[in-house]
Image (tube, rainbow over all chains, first blue to last red; front, top):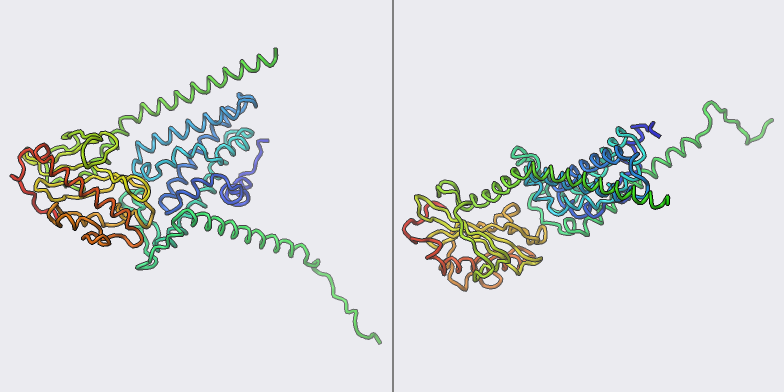
Length: 237
Length: 216
């Protein structure tokens, strides 16, 4: 069970089994905080950190806990990890903590985390479990940031505003105004926009998948190389 | 019998887990506690310094406070908060007063209103709000400099009827698509000013001797 291919894990987390757009887990934070790139990045980082910690811890204790109490034990681990990260963030990144607000403690209830703890980490050894946490968190985070960028761009006509809250004063001028005097497009910033753009991203992914499938099918259907075409019509005299 | 054994074992295991995780959290809490309270203090002071910059005072505003509670007329507080006093050479130059606008579009807007000793406004900031992103959240200095429009205003600038948004025949801009939020903030700021006026003896012990300079 322990010989898992890291390539397969990466592909799973980032694309084939992406927690946000395939498993559709953790939609609450996904929809709520992706109003801008900075919020999305902050939550993505925090979620990934929690995923790595919880997967690691769950993998470490996987042989101790019996099946009957595994879920409460996992929940305790996750809650503890989230609380510790929240405290640490408050101590070392106070402004980010302020922005993420209620969504930080709510990471506990993000199904991605319990899902990966129970579905993967509890059956694999330390290294693959931690890697799975990292890559699943990254997959989730990428969707979060993409969604944040789309909504910020369409909503406010600019990108990367207020990045200094996350990356320090040096990032204060990262803001790119794409369209000058842009009238705010509220739908994109408000929750309905989150649903619409998530739907569009999922549709895009399905489109790409369908295309890949079609191409593979076409590849298989292609006649064997070297086959000769035989003229069968016309008169042979 | 077997069932009983497994229940006992599992309960013990869970208890051990609970203890371990609690210890972990307690440890993190204890080791970050000081830093967190320091960070909170810095964040708090930062907001105050935006209103009364260092050049204008020489005391530690965070330590020069008057506590006000929900009974303070006009401030609409739900809990005890602090009025911060800025002094220069012992004289109070400005008081930063907490106020709450209970009639925001989505819930309360917590404000701090800096009032100079001469009764003019040193600055207004929204500390927390849940206003609609892109519409009402322009009360936040991070989103728009609308709140700077209060600077220098006082109870007589404009006179009372003018203390409203333009839609209500006042002098303050509203936001396109959002009138309720600015209306709430203007009203709360006015009430804080009236509070400062009514309590000026307590706030500015020797009022008027050191008129503020420079700040607009």
